[in-house]
Length: 153
Length: 109
Image 1 (tube, helix red, strand yellow):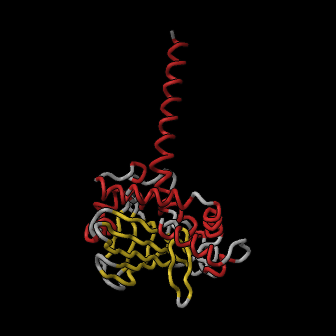
Image 2 (cartoon, chains in turn blue, yellow):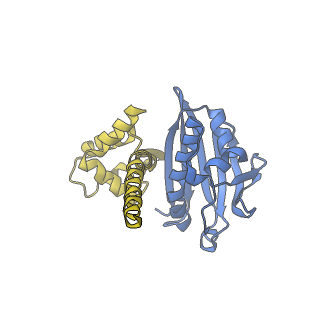
Image 3 (cartoon, chains in turn green, red):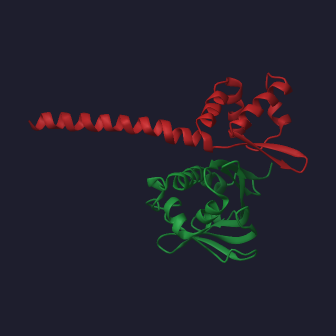
């Protein structure tokens, strides 16, 4: 199959509203997403980017679909590593579903290319980011290693 | 969430299911038919194992047109590693650190 895809599912004891804010607002993302902030108007077609603590853009793209507290689809390209930028845009989908007291978060990241270097690279980052997000929402504290940008990146 | 963790450990307790996870890890996003190829199991047995893996959220399936594709969900194993292995690893490191300071203390003395 000429695509690379990873899917992550995690259940978080929170509300869809809180989870949505945590995924999009800098005061939350800085705590569990390596001290980064996301910049976007959050409307269909709006530009979107992830900004590192030093102000450089780590990833950029645009909002494809947005349904607050429920679904977000982004076009997403890495801007830090030329061999990954060259692969072009990936597609990231967040789906949020309330299921009896917990919220199911599904994250699917796909690139229309076999053996994508980018998808492989993010596949080691996503589990760490998502467990830290879960920890932040359930206990009020994110995982320590996700609170700052990794050295040498 | 104890029930969820139990489901993960039970799902991992069968070699057939670990094999299915390894096959999905090698090539993510396979149909039931693809997963049955080269397996010494009936299609029914593979279906049953996949169902248990899905209930434990170790495997997630996504419909793509008429095809149901199966993906490994790395989250449960990551969470087990984080909560269990990480915890014991930290304990071991602390023991080593204590041993080091004790030995160095003895040298100093």
